[in-house]
Image 1 (spheres, rainbow, N blue to C red):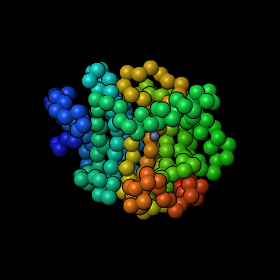
Image 2 (cartoon, protein in one colour):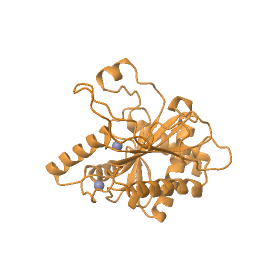
Image 3 (cartoon, helix red, strand yellow):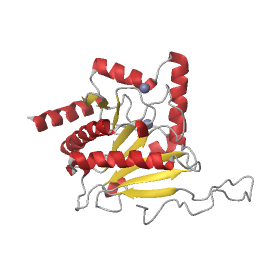
Image 4 (cartoon, helix red, strand yellow):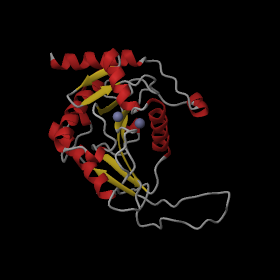
Length: 265
Ligand SMILES: [Zn+2]
Ligand SMILES: [Zn+2]
């Protein structure tokens, strides 16, 4: 459904006259939707059933596919804010979808880094990451047959983790139902472990995937990033773009693994 308080609106003109050559502006043109994954009141996504979580992952995929039918849209940003400190204005669990008429800077930067790595090494940087992390295993939290969750080598935030396919895939919207069910189970386990380790923290999660209507790429690899809100970006972070993090990713991964083991036993 459409967001009641949309950040961007599809009923605006996609362009605006350039009044000043110095001050460049864009209209608030876009589409902002909300997905509500459960009918009954629930505030913690870890409490969704595997079917509800899989349905959310499938809904995301279907909305990307639908937006890709319209040339106006270049990118679809999927994200979830859980908890007031993570920016959630409604307690009832919800996820958000924003379709954009441009590719956002974060994706441009990742695409360009991935292209550079591919040019220099002949490989997808994310596939290489999965392979190398699989050898040392110190930052791997858990995995299934097709997906892996890991704490990145240089996390910006304590307990930040990423989830990605172990096989190469550049476009999330091409993932089949069976795989999304497998991914849902993995994510629910991760969220339950996070709740144990950080006592139900507020967090943000978002998908990074290829821009709409682009060809399959051997360079880029879709992934979800999860950012628990354990600390606030402060003056140093805003000023320098560098992030201070006091929890090494190896320790974060170990604590998450222990929480998963305790759940199973
Ligand atoms: Zn890859
Ligand atoms: Zn990313």
